[in-house]
Image (cartoon, rainbow, N blue to C red; front, side):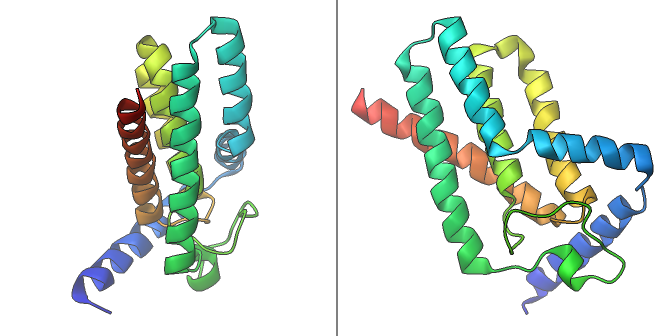
Length: 176
């Protein structure tokens, strides 16, 4: 393992052990709720509701669908290419408090999808940008706290979400 990867793994392990040190009954219930709010079907329901109740153009919906599509494809390619075990599978003292949707850890799909969602909804509700940022940070934190991701998994998940939105905007600008 290269020196850089070794240092990143060491940093990840230290940080996740710190997160686990904060575990408590009430905080765990909250983190499970936050993590559940990051499940993909909630974004679809929210987007459909906003689309119909706000009378938005198809441009916003096209952006959101394309961004989520890029995110999902890239997420699956990266995840299958890296095959990083989840923290609870390899680190002593780390247990998972939720059942993950798949076997591997890197990157965090919940965080990537939360980031895409936050950016898409920020386009139509700019006054809520601080709340959307907080939501992404909470989803990311919950995934580490619950033992199913390393910190670098969620950081790369955020980068993946931002990149997917950038790709979506670039493709739509070429089409329009």
